[in-house]
Image (tube, rainbow, N blue to C red; front, side, top):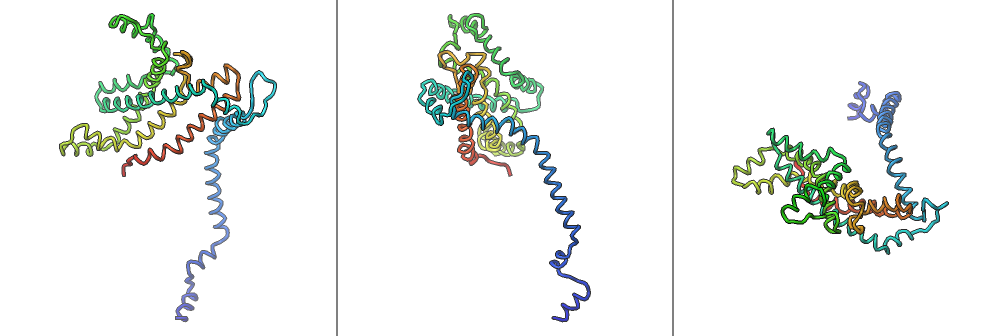
Length: 324
């Protein structure tokens, strides 16, 4: 046994550990240099994105956190540190509680409506016919328009004096409705306008998901005698889980951050009935010059979004079915 090992050593056959230990130092240097070059290349690609996030997201957020603890008005000569006073004042403010309620109702109406209309539109126009291509373009068309333009169109349509919609309703019922003049009707109207603006985008996502489903899965269910509703309920919808999850998250974020149409339609009225968190933040910062209160509102809104991401997303993801 010992002689065999000596013979192997004499023949120049070395164990793998010995060969690794005797690698030339130049080869090790080249391997480390190649890895270091890849790391620098990755850092170079990430640098523009990281710089953009640092300048336009993290730094403003840090300023908002600091500013929320100060009594900071653009008309004042300097800021005064007040700690949690801005948050306490907001929680005691009746208007703030109304704004939070408006935001909850607005999101609860706009998000399900936009997602449902987008899903139904995607199912309806799924196919390759020419008429369906035209229908896709018509439903997706509002997405291509600025939100302000969409709101201006609806402001003209809903005008109680000269609007076509009001005129049509007046011919039928004898009275022209002023849907933007009542508190509840105005809030529901701005939510529906936002749903009309966003449903085309969600339709596009659902349509991409529908067209990625293998048709033989649905055909096999039909061969077994399943109705179209059962095919959708037990085959199509589970496979749309990842798309539906993404659309729902996007819709909630859009509902909290899109307020351009409120500027055009109601400007937060009547009687603050359509005033939501982001619009109130704008008013505090640029109308009333209360930057400290606006910063506190910003931090609260970001906290709500983070809470939604941390708490809701894992629970929603449990019901998502991923295709193997």
